[in-house]
Length: 389
Image 1 (tube, helix red, strand yellow):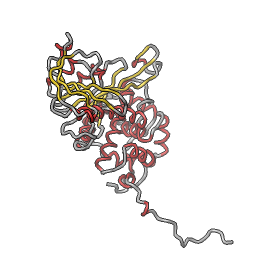
Image 2 (cartoon, one colour):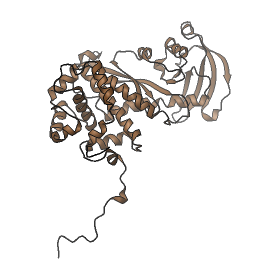
Image 3 (tube, one colour):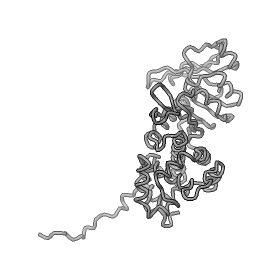
Image 4 (cartoon, one colour):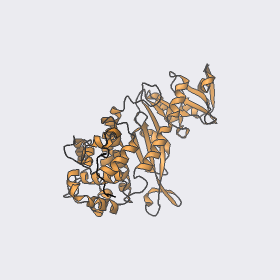
């Protein structure tokens, strides 16, 4: 509720304080801390994300300008750039990773019935990774190439609500395939990946766990057709076959039958060949599901444009991971507030409004609700003229 509090304080009401304290205690985040607590650190970093601050000095300057309102926002210590830098460098980044998982679990429940363009009762995920370039001189621990540093952001995105349910931050050299081993597979769910994740030994694990995968087949795929089903070519489908792998290595790694679907996309003038271990859904639905994989690409583009994950406030590995995980927390909090307040605005619009109104003393619902132009007071026609001629 509003009750005379600023928007930033109302926004932070969404943060489950008990779970926050458990995450901090798990990694002793406040051990021997007298002034600048983990909550103060989170507030400062969340403020930086919501208002697009460029540096630690920028954060310090802007918060000092609002020092009369900081107590009401939840700050209990003075924010100095050196103190914040040390906190980001020394406090375990897993505090914020665990907090993000708490928020993700909540958001996933809120968006469980969200429509994502395909009629599907099961949960559907898109899995991919993106590169975040870094300066090798400042981030030597993230060595990627001869004169380049980078980290990879591996993300499993729930297509209902575009909620990232699994995130792993690795150096740029880490193979995408290795991250398949870290996924906790849900029986009956769909996992959509591009052909860079085609490793039949790992894909067979999906089948053993009663989970479904959809990926693109490589051009040199060696397989033998066992059966074929009729398709409506007016929909873009070209074939729907049951195949078994015939390669000497792949046939041992994946001994079960696969479904091979050929689809022609008239919009891009391209032919796609999909592989899946699901034989129940219509072939066209499989093609539509793979098209939804593009949502994870849009997610990467969105967070790079609207969150502070390309320019970092610290250069250590712990500081970088801390900043990324707090950015994910902010993203999920925005998704939660959108659902909890039944807002029609996009996450981008919500972020933009919050960026200029965090310290306003009005209801957050009022700030984020559409303005009724009819209710805006118009100038009175009885107003006297300033100058009399």
